[in-house]
Image (cartoon, rainbow, N blue to C red; front, top):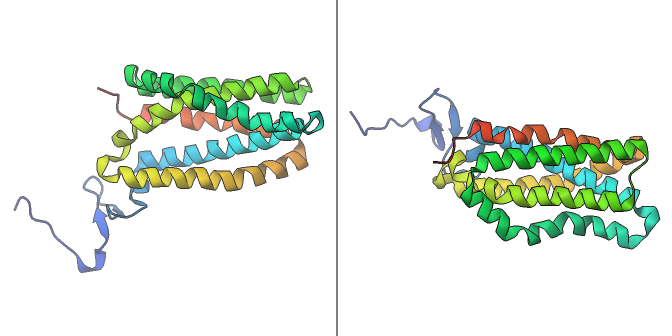
Length: 218
C-alpha cells in the first residue's frame, strides 16, 4: 500500500536507499551526508586540497625565514586578506553567475598559480615579493570560490542535511589544519619547499571537477 513503510528491528538507525538498496546512516546522523557519493567524493577532494594549502603555507614561511619575521607573518596576511576584501564582490558573483562555472574558473586559476610557485621555487627564482603576490592571488581564488561552494550545498545534500554538511565542512578544515603543517614540515625537511607548492598544485584538479557532478543552477 502506498505510504506504508516496512521496518526491520535489526536495522534501526539505518535507512535503505531506494536507488540501489544500500545501507546509509540515518538522516539524523552527523555522518549522513557522507553516504551520498557526490558529497563524499567532493569532501575527500576538499580535504586533500586543504592539506595542500596548509603545506604550501609552511613552505612559503620556510622560504622567508631568512628575510625577517615580518615577511613570514605576511604569508598568512596575503592568503587571508582577499577573503575580507572580496567578501561582497564574490557574493554578488555567486548570485549573478553560474556557480559551477565560478568554481571551475577559480580552481583552474589557483592550480595555475600554485604551479608557477612550484616552478619558480625549483628554479631558485622565487623572490619574496613574488611569493607574497602569488600567495595573495591564491587567496583571491579562495575568496571567489567560497560563496559559490556554500550556495550549492543544498543541491548536494538537501536542506534536511545542510546542518550536518556544514559541520562536516568544519571537520574537514580542522583536520587539514592539524595534518597539513605537519606533513608540510616533513616534506620541506626531506625534499625542499618547492615540493609543498607542487603538491598544492596537483591537489586542485579534484576540486575543479566538483561542478560537473552537481546539477546546474536553474
